[in-house]
Amino acid sequence: MTRAQLLLSAALVSLAACSRAPTPPPVPDVDWAHYGGDAGGQRFSPAAQITPKNVRGLKVAWRYVTGDLSTHAEALEHAAFEATPILAGGRLYLCTPFNVASAHDPATGRALWRFDPKIDATRRYPNSFNCRGVTYWRDPATPPAAPCAERVFMATNDRRLFALDAATGKACAGFGHGGVVDAMPGARLARPAGAQITSAPVVVAGVVIVGSSIDDNQRVHETSGAVHTFDAVTGALRWSYDPLSGADPTIKAGAANVWAPMSVDEARGLVFLPTSSPSPDFYGAARPGDAGHANSVVALHAATGQLAWAFQTTHHDVWDYDVPAQPTLGVVGYGGVARPAVIQTTKQGLVFTLDRESGRPIIPVEERPVPQGGEVGEVLSPTQPFPIAPAPLAPNRIRPDEAYGLTPWDRDACRKLIAGARNEGIYTPPSTKGTILYPFTGGGSNWGGIAYDARRGIAFVNTSSALHKVTLIPAARVEAEEKAHPHAEISPQAGAAFGMRREVLRSPLGLPCNPPPWGLLSAVDMTTGKILWRTPLGTTRDLAPGSQFFTKGVGTPNFGGPIVTGGGLVFIGAAMDNYLRAFDAMSGKELWKGRLPAGGQATPMTYVWKGRQYVVIAAGGHAKADTRRGDQVVAFALPD
Image (cartoon, rainbow, N blue to C red; front, side, top):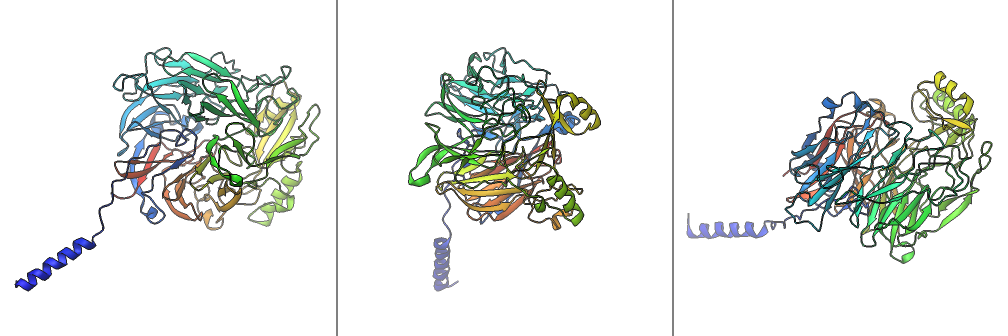
């Protein structure tokens, strides 16, 4: 090679080196340390490695098989795998529907330890076997290497609260009795499985706060829905709060419990409770008035349990319109002023935006007249609260001629069902004729809550839409109705003048009688209150194989919630098909979907570990949705 050729070759090598893209800086690790991503439940991660441009490259990175298909095969019919894992202290933690807690290597999913409290899988709980998540806490007063310096708290279906060493999974001996306490002390249950705990506890000000899920519609004198709080180190009971404590002492009711996830503002020392309806759900003659702080967002001082404020979203609830989702804490700039807020979605498809310190509405709320004329003895509230923005995210009024069906015969059957019931729009009271509840009691937004991108002030909300028909049955006829319709949902509401029957209105072909879409994902600008985009969520592929080709764009009812990332993506499972999906946060366009081995009726999470971003979801199906059962946790990531 000549000297000229050598110089040319060296120049080309030098040019190639100069044009080569610089090595990108290492991606910092990002945790998901709480059930809702952060203590305020925003479900936002700054992780930005996965973007709209590369999301189509996502592949399965690892799978973890919990073993429930072999150890609890028969009980899976009555289980819902709604868990969202958390990543904290260098480990991934999760729980199965049967409260088997485990820790995992974030890179491979390999189990580091497992803890099985051995709950009785033969019992039948009101909300299926369920564990939505566990809670991580670092004891600031304990040396880092000491046992139980880091703890994982898990509340169980059989109402126990465990404190586990985050490093080993062993029960913390100094907590309660060998690492466990009774999480509902003094509870008086009509049957052993009449109450359970489904949502993760929260920790603030050195205390662990635990809610409960109580069997609906069974009786007037129901179990108390009190929230209980325990010392995070010793397990000693610190304080309790009953949402009905401020009610008229002459009313007869129980419940008003906190079954959905709670939120924490650590700086202000506040815990936010989403409370449910008082008992029984559909007839309230024994509880005139608004039942204290039932159906409310309640803010308590975590150290003492004293009330800071409460805001009621449904007055004198006779529709099972409890507050079903985690209150989301974020800064909202509505009206041009940025204020710390609580964003609360409801089963009615309404979004309330409240000042975090006072509970007063940031987006104004109007009391509007609603239908009256309940059954004998019922005294309804003449008005109900409606935020002026955003517009309701789920439809709440239907005419018989709007009935849906794939054929004229199908449509006519639905038209007759709607026309034969009392139907005056939202808040029509239950009746002996049968009343349309629209949205249905599993509708609007549910326990999955919302995702909130505080940088842009945008909330992402998934909603479900279907019709319930609720019929009041005179108490003397309840037993006969149960015998005549053994497969129907009939509840006695013992002690009340009426029992009840609840059914979803479906066509002869099994499709909802209300027009689609039956599932939606929406983006709401919380600065203006305007809906930015809406897109159908889910397909009927796994409900009726092949039907997706002629039911395109109908969406499905859904269980679970969304997350949003710094990369500009919204990830969500939830729909009644076996997919995890990614949507463009700006446009709502579906960009990717990953096939799951079973129903993904859970809220996903994401984290960055050693420079690689993972998106993880529980894929185990859901008893109430009757989706495919399984026992896997699946992680997706871009190729190495």
